[in-house]
Length: 206
Image (cartoon, rainbow, N blue to C red):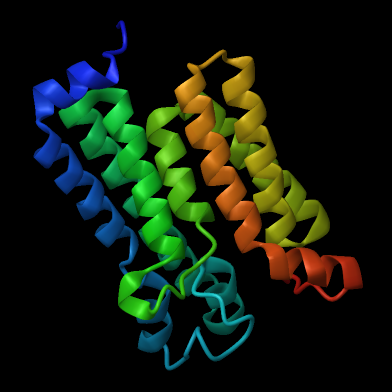
């Protein structure tokens, strides 16, 4: 299928509808999956462990099932946002909605912009937009996280594979730019992890 140019996508969907979907995707991204799951198990994910509202921290605090629930919930935010964008307006709107969901997860206006690192939500976006590359990213995460026992290293490895994948696949420049933007955001959100890795103090998954 020949991708529709942005102007045609906007003309078909309507600028207000497209903007509404992007805003809705951002708001979906702000849904506090980790906080709700952790609270249900008597833990405060923002005050305990690393303080990060993400699957890895919930896993350490409340166990495997709780961590898996958060992972699934955050993944769905990216899947739904990108999937709806794709169905309504094609790949341009899909990527815009997916990116908005990641930004919402990382910087939720409902929680003073104190959010997670965007890995699972970004993965959900990638599964819809780049399914084969997303599978390679998942393998990279699993291998690196298993060998090093560091979820952060697995996440960073997956982002590298994602960028390499879209470049090797010769995706359009605007898609590569969007992916690079998401990856830079995720890497930036891992600043504290990188500092702990440098000091040899990064928390283990085990």
